[in-house]
Image 1 (tube, rainbow, N blue to C red):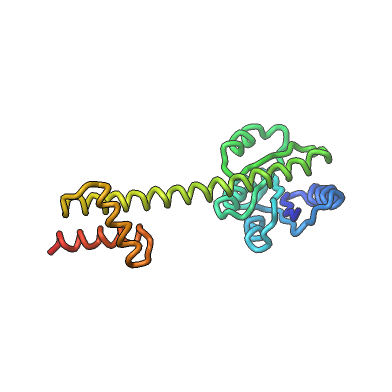
Image 2: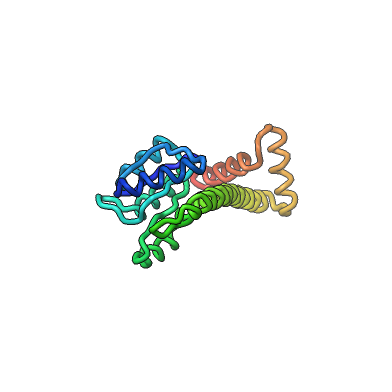
Length: 194
């Protein structure tokens, strides 16, 4: 697993690096602030970012994690102090925070948290992909329904016959039904403008 470690305390970064390397992880980079974490994530494409929630600079860990997720780079596991429970609650409601660890970190908790985050990330990506596919299918279905309505009105035919016409045009012109539907809609709009 390729890990980017982000913490403003060099000693903590060093400890985390040692723990993770012993567990077989590859540390691809280190950062001490959120902005650098985002830049390194973009360029190095880690499997997961292990990042402190509170850091100095323009962008803290939570903001950096949000950006990394928005850009769909990888999951983030946040490191937090026990007294930062309000930040943990905010992080829990943020898409992209797939796990967190409380300082002082227990060595045996680190790898399971990273593995959990990577597994959740894969699931998240699959759901997003499925969501995009379903939105496209729904949009295409609506276009076909509009085109059917236009044909039904124009030729005084049934819905079934209108669908068959679109299907036949699709086969005749060797293109998909959505393209035919779009052409019917555009043609209808042009005819109404004339």
